[in-house]
Image (tube, rainbow, N blue to C red; front, side):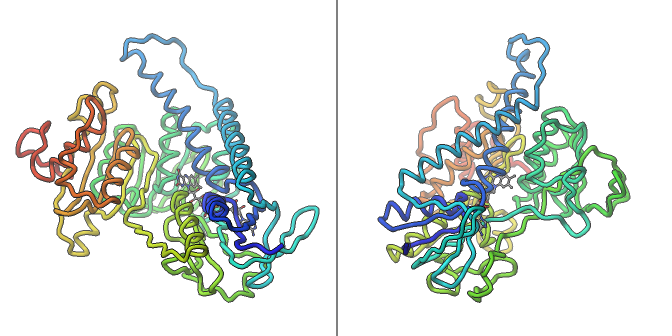
Length: 460
Ligand SMILES: Cc1cc2nc3c(=O)[nH]c(=O)nc-3n(C[C@H](O)[C@H](O)[C@H](O)COP(=O)(O)OP(=O)(O)OC[C@H]3O[C@@H](n4cnc5c(N)ncnc54)[C@H](O)[C@@H]3O)c2cc1C
């Protein structure tokens, strides 16, 4: 059977590319060697957020008495939380299988090996198949790896896959790395009343964030008694003792290595293609095409942004380039990035330091979530919205707040659509909502915030 498009990997990049190709009438084959849904569904976004959903219920329940509700003997059973996580993943997996089937996509379970730039061999436990294709999309994703001096043994030192398989939480954890996974699990462990020590090699927490948000995050960590060390690395691990570069020693029950992933570029037979690389990643042009005309790469293997929504968007764009000859034209300044900390941290576009470095002129407005009624109603008043903009457009959005991801996304819709701050001033926001802080922050660009005393400038 000859396919218009063959796709290797059924993660959020690959399966959405397959659906789009099928919508456009192409004959498409999707090849997956493990479980459909990839890292995102099985070992990433979905299972971790399901654990967070349980954590949120637990933490809300801890505050019930403040809201006038009495509850005795509050406790949690992590085994049941883990079970719910697995059930959620299974349920979504079944739905996805149905979706793939209903789109008439040929799904082959097996390992794809490259034979040439028109043929794949698919090896499964029971047989081997050859697939002929016109175009190939590589969406093979990434995997956790050990760091040179930190070997993951899956017992004392765990990676992101292992951490999701825990059936019982340890009493103490040392987390290495303050990227999305480090921040997320610092929230989970500390929220479930466990001791957390976080080590970050960079001079600030979550180094890719706008500096002001990173500083706000530090203040929140301190309040939540999460011990953290910046500009610090793990010097060595001796038995169950961890020695840091600042001389401090800890004996946590586990170490969680939340840094270090490698792209799955070592596909069998890939060397026959002479595909160009960009360091460890497949090099692609603006249309996600490699140096070989009929071979594209999307998602984590490109190393552009390692998040599910970028993989999906790239998948759709690659397919549209193949089938419609439509330019992909992806504006990576409109990519939303979220860290599911407590509270959520969400951003898109330039940080303030980037604007300064690029000598782009901008105005800034920072609005504290504590200044609107809804956050006090909910007792979730930590955090800020920070907007960087010029007269014509929003340049950067940085939010740290309960519901931060949703708040950022509202602003990102305006940013992506090129709506000017002046126009946004006239949007009517429902009261009382968290979103009112967006309006206030926009007004702040014109020094017209209504719920801040005149002349107040927040030092972030
Ligand atoms: C703990 C964790 C939490 C995360 N949380 C979020 C989040 O909240 N939001 C977010 O946007 N992103 C999140 N991510 C990142 C997100 O999961 C990835 O960016 C996304 O899954 C990448 O999609 P992909 O399609 O490129 O590859 P993947 O999801 O990695 O899928 C690739 C697939 O290819 C298959 N494959 C590989 N080689 C072959 C072969 N030779 N033959 C056949 N099949 C093959 C693999 O088995 C895999 O199923 C998280 C990641 C982790 C680890």
